[in-house]
Length: 234
Image (tube, rainbow, N blue to C red; front, top):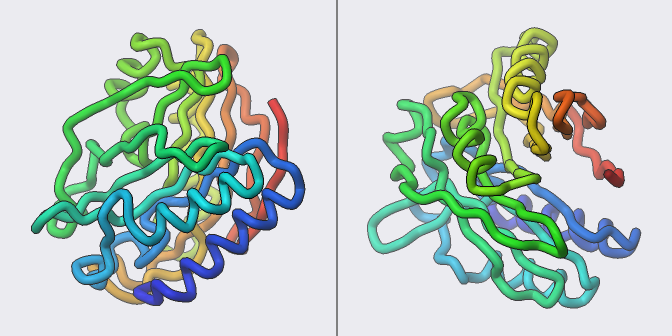
């Protein structure tokens, strides 16, 4: 947490690795520059566009690959827990500011107020972030707006030893969001330990998920407690 230079270096390495494998799109986690709830976001947050999104745009254009990533966004005096999607040509396609921010997060991040659905290569897609999927309202609204696919950067933080219970709850929640509708969620979680901020000591467990409707079936799950580039098609 708080080591923005190292985090950015690792993020860009992951994008390059996916590009070399010929991937069409990569999804990266929530608040990946400073770490979720890191107090250093107050000084490390960036504008959109800014240095991080420009770096992602260059790689997207080089590899003809779309990129979704969380980002700690600064606009004036406000800091937002945001996500961006960048197209294969390096253009910024969409941004989202987390709406269902936990109370503990509102001491650092301002709340987003907008939802959007957009076209990407023949599909209606949308962005949300982590707890935006916990209640039905946001996913239901995006589905009613026509979204077939939600890209969701995440930071699931739990006490050590609670990984299995937590991922069972998250899987069940995504099952409810996707069941009986043509909607899939790609939820990509961070790994590591929160060593600063109000949840110091909690783990980011990995276990990234892809859940596909209309049966709410888990079609992919990432590694637990370790970084991984997982490649799939659906």
